[in-house]
Image 1: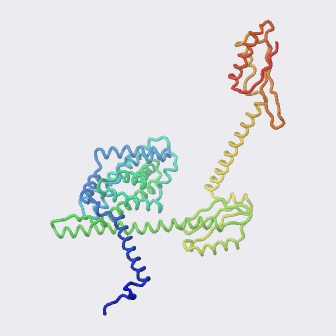
Image 2 (image 1 turned 90 degrees about the horizontal axis):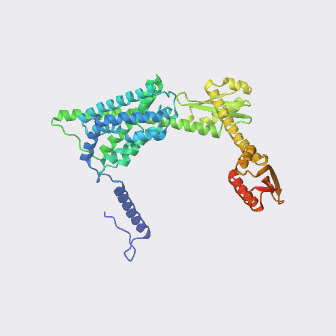
Image 3 (image 1 turned 60 degrees about the horizontal axis):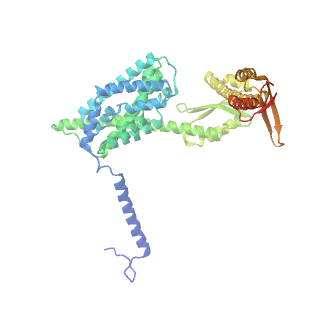
Length: 477
């Protein structure tokens, strides 16, 4: 039975049906607009992209030397903790080629390109680590800088940077006319080079935790950049490499699919683990700031351990009752991310016991904070003392040496027989003012015209010599 539209006597649809039709039309146009806005299929040059990626895979000749020099620059930047130098090194480093090559080769079943990518990736990593190790071995600066420490363990932010950076990179490469600025930006954001330099630092100084942590960070970044490349190449429908032998084609497809699964499954697991750890630490900080407080007690330091599900709180001052700690623990159970966690409060009967129970590292951190605060207070007091001394000197005449000034005056004006100095304090009953006042006794044999000229010159010289706009000179004959 055919569906009929309800129309009024004039053949028009009811207002409700008109609104529904208008809404459908707006929705259709919005979908069309968004589709045209975000579509990248039309301007994608698949053949040129494949050729460009293959060209960037090789590490020899110019690329090898550029890599070596950029590693030296990045190592220096990490050694002196200069972010600007590290960024400059990343701008010139050719590290992305083999990693993008791995992702594209798996996506299009190109086993030869995949083999070349892995070989050159190994050469790239080996050359980078050896170069960085040589630099840090001969460098006189051996201490751990903040830039080095920041490259020793991946966080969820590093993973997200690698994912979105990799997506931006491969999309830029697929566009007709490569967007060079995007590629440079991705090279900075994904930070592949600093971890490799940190591996070299760890090897050169036998700090194996540094080396392994930095290598782990590099591996995470490389995997997610390759994975992003794989996803985009698949979505854009890049043609698969054709093989004459159907059995070889199927075998290559199976190998590529297996590699993709091997990369994807651990990557997803790692992403989830890092995300949970980040959420745990964030919720722990939020819980501590909003819940943990007790009159007469102060939190010195707190640490959260995601692996052991513990939150350690170091407190000083009045002892927090067990009932209060149990209340905190109950509130902790209401937070989904912290359900299985346990609060451990470290405290003592008095301040001495509190300090004794703290770890050496924590005590040194507290002492460092106290030193920094005291140093800042001392510097502030020194500045205030210097200002006060400067103001006081205006009243004492210490802004210049009177003996030196009098000798200069006698050399320049031989007719001066005596000179005196004092500060004259005046007031208009609204404010006080201090006027430097000089009393000058001149040779009585001088004529009036000569005396007037000498007095004027002396007054001008004193203003320039003392850099004062206001002073008084009393002339005596």
